[in-house]
Image (cartoon, rainbow, N blue to C red):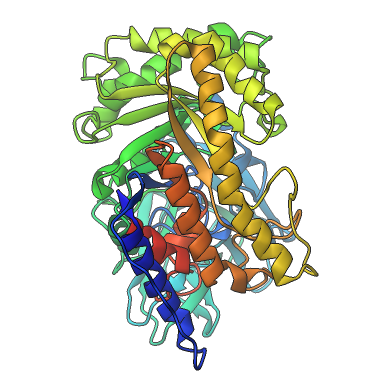
Length: 572
């Protein structure tokens, strides 16, 4: 429970950070023990994206999607966009004259499987680089390891070396080394003598011919947990006593089961190449948090992936059942066997509750081709919820839910009620978003707005949400025929200009100082307390891993946490 005494203590703590700069200021605080809000658990969105450039360093590996494949299915991977050029995290500078990239299916596998990146070098000047963005902090005296699987054709005889490009030191190279015609792993460790920031990491080639690259990773060996996450992340998530972690966002909708569960290597090779379902569940175990998996609508089968509901998606959801086997089934099930072969134990006995959210913002036009109206989505959830609940590996600590709409108009409440009417008898929860200060009366700011305009909208939002949410809960209850648990699936107190999504651009955001202000921290507290009083148990902060929890880890890991991070610590 949150009391006025606790609130006043938090305000004094927050004000103390800022007030020391205000000479002659006087603070009067009245303390009593009246309870003003029930206990709400703070949660955080942590995936499935794992790219340093989007500000969400989830695994300790700072190279994005380095296995060059999304799963064991050859047909699926052949079409994967990593093979269509320098995408999926690879820097466009790799496109230079005489340098061609092509997919390779190889009968002699490297660590992660048969797929790798083939590089044909017909001509070069100076060096040819395969590089990827980083942006990670490089603490002084920490060992930073680069590692890759490499092999060459007979027509390549030149040397290779690793490169790190940093903010302060420029380009740092490993010693030259030669590679063979068989797959082998090569590594190099760089230890900065002063605190720095890594711009990118690269493999450099110095001759013509054909080489193959696979499983290229890089990480801070002095800041990595046993399961391959930054130890700083694990520690701070524990510090705020995270009650739930959510693997979600619009990124999930087009994902497949084989891609989402692909776990190419264990920690004996290095930190994970991606942040999929197994990595997410491992993080929940490490932190001691409940898990919410947003199950992609693309979990169907090979013949029906990427189809709309009317094209046939409605009737194909075998992979929803396979996911249950993967999470908690034994080795007599196919996907329980897949997990066991990855060296992983079931998670159902190691996580108190596992929530399955059926798709992310299916109403959103950005969810194409999976976006649906309320009736179709209600039917979609009804079919899947009945099948999942009757499946042999369904567990008592599992929960099923649907993704709701914004609670800012009767039309949008109508969407949730329509969905609930179609599936409510088989559903346990629904989700709500509390982005703010987006409101029906004010949807964004311009850099010319005064402090009064910005903060008035900021402080108006908690009361507006407090008034709107009970109406939404009642509408859903009436439609479903029972009360459903409500979870805030995405929320923040970011202040940003209209169409200026600057969450990750901390040095460029014109509202950066306001986002670090006492106003943002106090508004966080107000919204948290108001929503908690409505019986909302989980409240998942969005974009908080890099901003609130990690500070600015992408710049420097000793960055002081934001004011609202302190609110999270004290409230939890």
